[in-house]
Image (tube, rainbow over all chains, first blue to last red; front, top):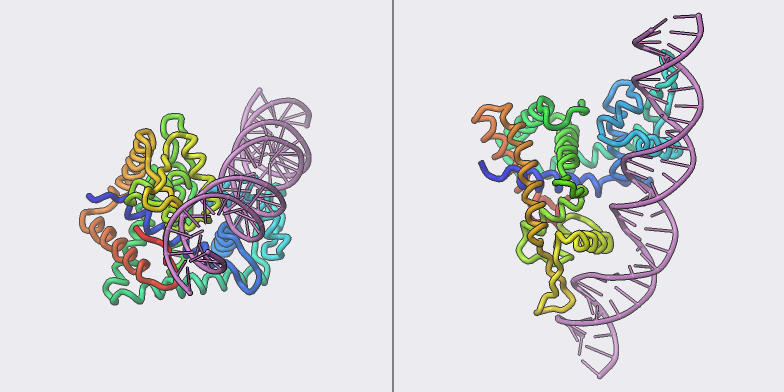
Length: 149
Length: 149
DNA sequence: TATAATACTTGTATTATGCAAGTAAAATCA
DNA sequence: TGATTTTACTTGCATAATACAAGTATTATA
């Protein structure tokens, strides 16, 4: 088999750059990490701080501060869990949802442009392949243990 | 079409974590960015500073300092270009090559473990798909302009 | 030959990072 | 039940990463 790593290196770097350039919405500048946090809060069900930090592989102390700045920006809300007062449940504010949705749209339109280079069969194959990959990675013991979603 | 972004978000995050945990070689701690730099220097032909910085989407000033620390660690060598004295050509030292090779091996063995979850047909499909993706991204105007490789 | 452009480097300020050590609440143990 | 441990987070601190502005030196262009 050819060098798998270089194949993935190129792909993920490109996607990373796409992500990097994609994160300002109407004057509101969002960093790459912040956009990941918004994305995860939006996609998990009533997530705690620890859950999102684990998903993103970020130290909880760093994450705590990142959330603090997102709260200051009024994009994220922290609600104490009534059942366990140690836990803070994270959610997006209306503005946070708007920003997250807007980033999602931009990313999807970029991706659609990328996919427009392919024919229907290729598109389907590629999408199915990424699903396969994600499932395989989820099962692997070598990596990705703390990651859901 | 389903939400492409979330598909890619999950995949690249997983690969990113793999990469993140993959970068220490026998006491020598290499950061994620440093491993990317080593990789690119190894894979491009007599690259200049500017070339690698562009490939990685890093500001040249940040990159300059990153290279300085890699030179201090004796992993990278800077050679002035005889034809244009402004340019520094980057190359790996013997130790740099060893480290880069070792990271490559680790990443590849992780990836092989991931791929071992699939049958032969699936493997081939996935690899072909990533090639397709990389080519499509390379052609896209939306992103990836400064990127080669 | 003067001017502009390129390839870097350095100064500085801001932000991101994570370890250590703290608090408060919940779970476990004895 | 009361003592100990574990969990979920926060804050202090030191270090590293980041990029803009301004610098130097070299090459290209007018």
